[in-house]
Length: 241
Image (cartoon, rainbow, N blue to C red; front, side):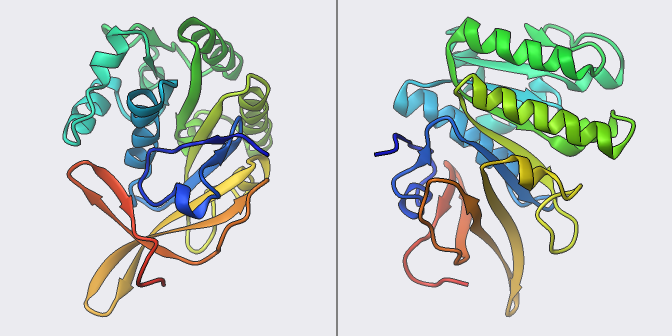
C-alpha cells in the first residue's frame, strides 16, 4: 500500500485516503487572499512539530522576516525550528534588488533557475528535509523572459522535487475559473488543490477541493474551510458546496 504523509491540516487527510502519497508534488492554486501561504506554512510547521519531518520554505513573494512574523499569529515559531536546523527558509525576494537578503542564512542573488535548483537540493541534504514549499510560481515567472522558459523551469523544479523524494507544494495564482496563472503548472504536478472564496447568500465562504491527486481516490466536492487562530481547518461533514 502507498505510504501516506500526514498534512497536519485538519480535515484534509480525511478526504485524501489518510494523507498525501509520499514524495508527491502538489500544486496549491487560488486567487489572492485564499490562504495559500498559510496552507503551505501549516503543512511545513506541523510536519516538524507532529511528524518529525524537516522542511524547506522557498519564498519568492515575501521576505523571510515577514513570513516569520505572519506565522507567529498562529503560534508557529519558524525561528525556533530554524535554530534547531529542522526548518530552512530560502529567501528569493532579494533577487528583485539583486542583493543577498540581510541576515538570512539561505538566500539567492539574482534568479537563476539552476542556482535555485542546486540550492534546494543542497539544503535538503543539509537539514534532511522531507517537505518542501515553493511560494510562488508567478513570482518565478515575472523574472523569466517567456512562457517557454517558464514551462521548462517549472518542469525542472517539479522533476527535481520528485527525484529527491520530498513531499512538496508549489503555489500559483489563478485567473478566472482556471487552475493556474499560466495554464501549465497543473500539468507538471501530480496533484492539484484549489482554494477559493465564493459568495453564498449574503456572505463569502472559503472552500477547497481536490482537482487531481495521483495514486489517490478522492471526492471532487467543495468543502468549506476556515482560517482560525491555530491555522486552517477543513469541514468535511455537513454542508458541501
